[in-house]
Image (cartoon, rainbow, N blue to C red; front, side, top):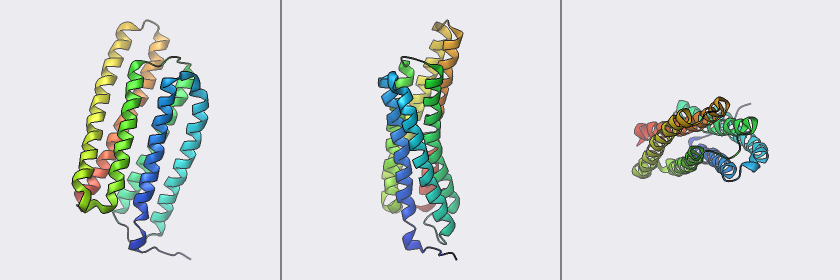
Length: 210
């Protein structure tokens, strides 16, 4: 009934990781479109829902392949964690965009714009790292360079988030407006943290197998 796949066919996992990471990156670009023109928010919610469904299909494909592959190129636990981590990234962005629409936020705050730009950069670095993972021994140093860039971007995100939250509590007098933007900024900052978690997973694979 089952056709377990051989090791030489299992490198497809890396291609699927890259495909999943590209959906994460596309989600960040959709968010950036909304930051540039907030009137697009409702249209972009539909687009990110479609993106999330496509990302789920890639995740399902990875898990199905994992169940049918006898010898995997990296530990099964690492494959599972990377697949779910990449898929969760799109979910974070979908949740953020849904809040922007529900709250009728209007013009975005500068901190939200900056955090979104960081997410585009972070997901781009994740893609680059994953593209090199197939030839891990050869690309160890380059992969780690991309991981370090994600870490630096996450630190910059923390700085922007703290500055924006301080500004909200100091300058925004409308408590409803404060609550709306605090929630959105927290979601964006959580997404930058999630990029760091994915980077940690990739680094763990490199340390294990390089």
